[in-house]
Image (spheres, helix red, strand yellow):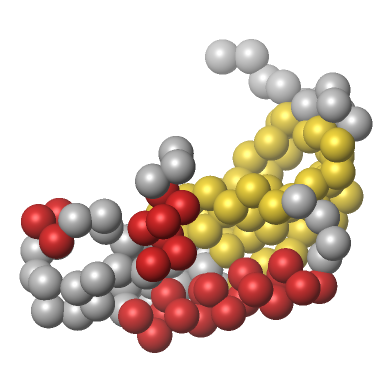
Length: 122
């Protein structure tokens, strides 16, 4: 395996029972200008080199409880308000589209309407 000096990385430690986040990027493709961290996310603000396009890529690993996921969405709304740049949000939101995908329909049986409506367009 060849070592590439342009590949960089950043990480967020695990949050409660959720796993951590490892973000990796190739500096020759996406030049990171700043990094912001939260308990359930890492945001890379930078420039897509080929398109000369400033944006943010936010990697998330949502908590397993409704309260933890609400905190994540509150954080993402704050980021959106604080930074006037297009944002790509990727990761594990711990949401399901259908009731049968759950082990238990006990909590938050409907799921997050924003996730459900957005995922239909993917």
